[in-house]
Image (cartoon, rainbow, N blue to C red):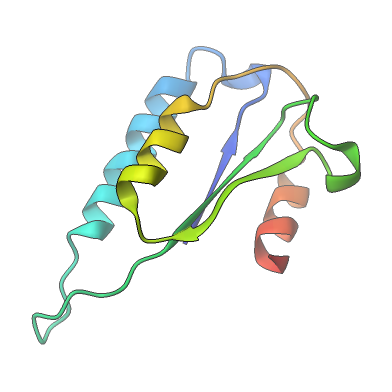
Length: 100
């Protein structure tokens, strides 16, 4: 799975709630069990978009971390993100995350 988080100004006031809801979904996925009681291997990537200081050549999209199974590291990276202005290129972040 990949988390694509909008960090543009439109998320001011909503970013903390969004991060908490995303983390709730991630932690629920981390507790998943298969029907044979085995634990599935879950890897999650994290991207931010909507920050004008990110590289224009990359569509203002920045990969925070590639696919990892270390949910503690993912949590640290997710909760460090803040809003910082910019335009929301949703299509670009979807394309980039699928390509990578």
